[in-house]
Image 1 (cartoon, rainbow, N blue to C red):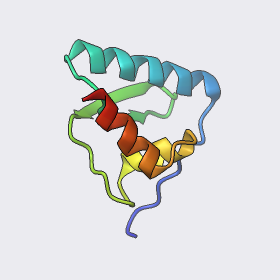
Image 2: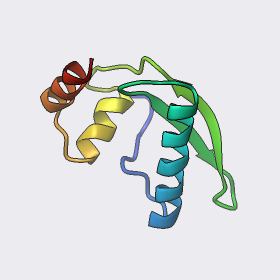
Image 3: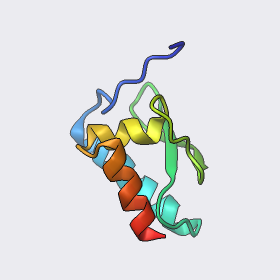
Length: 87
């Protein structure tokens, strides 16, 4: 309750798509499997800067991975089932 998360981010579609592409490239480059969370910041010129990759993101109601999945139309139970089926 100390932070507000806006998901999906209120940014241009072009920037969002670029970040998604870079995030997937980083995920693959670092040898991640199944899922991860890749964090970015945008500077004042809307240039994305990679912050970190989380290989074990939280899975609670307030965690960012479930929030991102929900924004993509994937409810929590479906998310868990997708992860289980990949392992």
